[in-house]
Length: 315
Length: 315
Image (tube, rainbow over all chains, first blue to last red):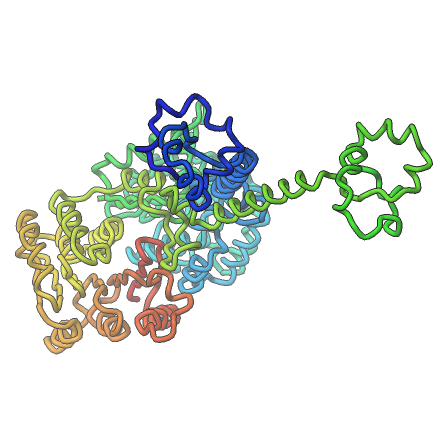
């Protein structure tokens, strides 16, 4: 390229691309050396195009560049991943956001394989549940194991489980309680718990699990009326999110000081970040998270397990 | 394009690109309709090129396609992310693998903002530590908070902290212990703990923290000789990974039944998956994970916090 000093803008004229023939001769510095030496004065005074390339070459290059950039953009944004069957980081490109990598991530598989100790009946129930509609809304295996460990840690005898579904978390808790332990679990739909019952029996835990087929709010009120406040060691709030704040308050009353309250799915597949208008569930989960954050009656941890697990330790 | 039936392969001749002039006339079905009607017999018998495009157009398209594919490939593989200052899922493209998203992920930031309750001195110490060399090897804030919550849950009075560094985890534990509580922490390098000491003082926790400037193994043996076996409530093993198995065994002896043992960095930035030859640290962490998995003396959870956090609950 000719240095800027020898091609002042005023001398260039209006067009950069209108002299392809001339540009093809003088544009490249190697071949233009002869032209310059043959008429040095002309080279100093004549307008010299700033970008001296044949028009077809320039247009071709621009088209190639545009195609490359389009590919780069698409490749980077993810649709390429879809074309090629690859998986993308869920928190960037999918509306459903999670913190953890896909379940087939080798590192996540390593973590599970080095820590999961699942009772055979519990494992069977998990696999059975995953075959059901909405089966993946069940508590995850590492959440259930952590919860069982915490129940053992505080020598829990009484546990509360709102939202039985097929009874995976109820069974995990029952297995962690002493022989005289009791899990009160409630569900409005009688179907899924009946799927789990044979496996409760297989694990010899059926006698510990007390299934109430009624709305969670009624269950909680009945327990409070029966004078069971401050008697539960562990509570899991995994029922509908419409009433999650009411469940939280009542469970806190039912827990003893030093009891553990666990609330799964508090990230609501990422929707808590910016709830869509009309998504009342996301808004209620978001409000509950705010409330718990400011609640001086509990110590808290929010763990990146499953779709987010809040642990509230009653003081 | 002319259907395959009218252009049998035997009639095509050897060249596909050698008749650009003809191709430009008969190639596009719309404009070729007239040619066909004027001499139908010829159209049926003459060789017709299969791909009928001008050579320059074909070559140009091929070049555009190649540029697009290159961009797509680069965009998908990650270097584009580097060009554009974006961050990529660490478990796919970086040698250092983590389970969690980058710290600036909005969902991770949400999780922290809705759960972190950090004492001002603890926060100052964390920010100070992050400015130090290897500062990011410190226990993460959500790990420290979980550990403090567990210490409160089991009403811990005595804690052990191998690998003081600047004393972030020691301070977090001290804040969770009752006034008469005691944290024994050990470090071989006197420098970093001296950075933290003013903040221990600021939090009025200095009297609870007992700093031993000696190798962790010596500390553990001295404690065992002093008859402190089964007296600790909490232990954190975050010293060198060379001796991690020995630390684990001795800490388990020092813990009381129902005590909590925490081991951070058990995924060793993903190197536990396939330790490189000669990477003895990765191999030892991997072996420790195997050992803990089979250890019937503890209940375990392996959490995707920081670089992996093993919690072992002594039975």
